[in-house]
Image (cartoon, rainbow, N blue to C red; front, side, top):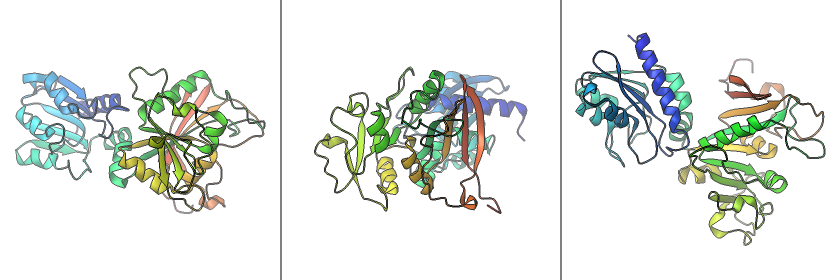
Length: 364
């Protein structure tokens, strides 16, 4: 039976895991807390970077001899394979851990089975404590493994009446400096930042992370079907981070750096989004921050490829101008994409609303 102490330790492990966001891909974020035989915290750790020690190893090193006879609380099932590091299941056994509690089973067929290995060696193993919280914290990696494509978070900033720009196309700045700083946090946690040709043409965005200490710069991706929006000298082509310009196979793109061009098949409108996500996934991209604009966002929603929505709503009214979402293939209220709000918090004078697609409901 899970106790209050078990819950406290696992929640701490989930908090620790979040410290790895933006630096562990293509690996998951994982946290671990080790308590000694008396139940006191002996060590803790988190997976800090791909190729480095896993969370369990960091925690075991911190615990030292106090790990023997103790309990390990881990957000993800301990791995059971040798990759760039050894199997964590064996590390826990070697340390003399007598009980392992993990939140989420490992869906990766190459790494799963750690729980069974531990049980076979006589360790008490329990699964499922705070599983929903641990799943949410590791949603990008879990989605990439289960669906074979990157996790897509659509971010937008708008007025309370849903406008992302005024009628004359001016949009700087609808939201506050605090909200814009928070967006850089989202960029720092993503493997790739994605915009469409309209955003590239109008804003000439640089798409790098600023103001986040130690951030790994994400891959910058522009969907420019006809190769007409990104010009030589565009800010997205600077040396801040690697860049891909996704264009159709027949688009003339000699004006772009050859290494930056990603050729993809066309769809009915624009590029084939499945092909785009597959190409990014093949490059190790496990999470995508979709920043704009409304046409590209509409295409992703229509394709059912948006896993989370983060909207920054400013206490501003415009009454006219482009809206946050263009045609998403929804023609009647019964087809509306219903969302469950998971968080609503003030960011400076603005409100950040986070929501995820809701399970299908009867009558919708």
